[in-house]
Amino acid sequence: MIHRLFHCAIRTGQPERMKNFYTRIAGMMVDARRTQVPVKGFWLRPAAPGGDAIIHVFSDEDALTPDGRIPTGGGAVHHLSFLTKGYHETRSRIEQAGLSFRSSNLRSRSVANLCARSPRNPR
Image 1 (cartoon, rainbow, N blue to C red):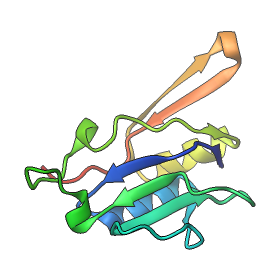
Image 2 (image 1 turned 135 degrees about the horizontal axis):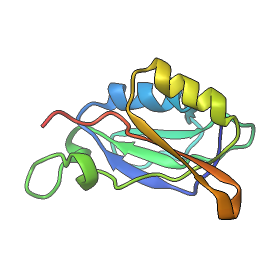
Image 3 (image 1 turned 90 degrees about the horizontal axis):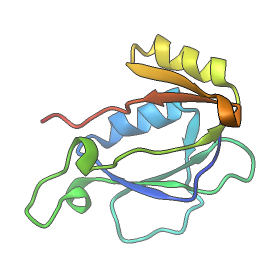
């Protein structure tokens, strides 16, 4: 389960696909408590009690760059880094979803690392 990241904005042309990834695979929830800002999309927060909204997903015209496109891949976001608990459960959900990922151990810090790609916009 994800426990902490301050905030990150992601642009997408497929908001429902993005929402499904972060709620079903990463265990987050849509945050209706977040102060509304004039940007189409939604906020996501950890499911842990008291969790703050940390990802703002921009959609529709608010996801467009000045040249009228929605960036894909690293243009939309480089990566997100989360402190989590439940490594094996998270890995199992990623595997069950058929997503590619890599795993490594940072022995000097006693940290297990899972890197999975969230859904991408079609090119």
